[in-house]
Structure formats: C-alpha cells, structure tokens
Amino acid sequence: MRPNAAGADTRGGTQLNVNGEYFIIKNVTTRTVNVGGFIPDITTNTYGRALPTYNLPAGAKAYIHTGSGRHYRDRTGAHHIYRGYARHVLLNTSTAKNPDLRLKKPGSRDNNTATGSLTTCNWNTARDGITYTC
Image 1 (cartoon, rainbow, N blue to C red):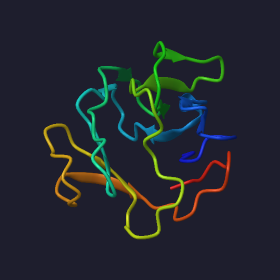
Image 2 (image 1 turned 30 degrees about the vertical axis):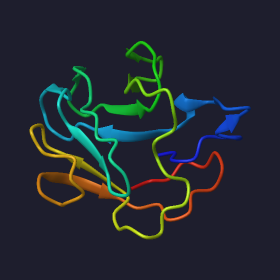
Image 3 (image 1 turned 180 degrees about the vertical axis):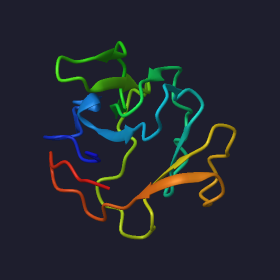
C-alpha cells in the first residue's frame, strides 16, 4: 500500500498524483470474486465508499487507486481499480488509530469498528512515495 503518494499532495489548491495513493488487495480464494461492495474503512475519517464492481480472478492482486481511471489488468498481471475520489483520502501521518485501514465485507458499515473486517493495515507515519506491505 502507498498511503503517501510521491511528491506534494496539493499545489495551489490543486490535488496532485491522487492515483499515486493506493492500497493492494489479493483474492486468496480459488474462484473469481466480484470486489464490488467491499468497504475500505479508514479509521480516522469517513471515506468508506464501496469498491466498484470488478471481477478479480483467483490468486490475483489489485491496486485500489484513490483517484479516477479505467479499471484494467496490466502486462504484469496486476489489476488496477479506481475509487473515483478527486482528493487524497489515506492519511500520511496516522499514529492515533490502530488499524488505519480495514477492508470490510460487502454490506458492512463505514463506522470505524471492527465489525465485518476481513483484514487490517497500519502504517503510522508514511514516508513520501514508499510502498508498505500489510
């Protein structure tokens, strides 16, 4: 995951490199899973817009980008899914909460509780442009 995209987040009030901010999910099942409806619950704010409909094959990983774009599979086999935000939503410095991000089952609420959580991640203070493994 990369909660802190490379470079400045804004310049002159304009958001920069929003798609440089992402987290990664992996389908650990033996079947294709539609990720639509899974909730990224960011525990220090309310940005839990459900993931869009996308069929992620068994064993595949997907980069879940904050910004907008066309969902696709790249030449390395990684999938790219876009959440459609016009601003950065993952915190760069986030030591007050643990975890910083939960991925919840479809139908779960973005309510900063563990209910419905499938996995969690904490990055504390994210360095500029560094990818973290959770």
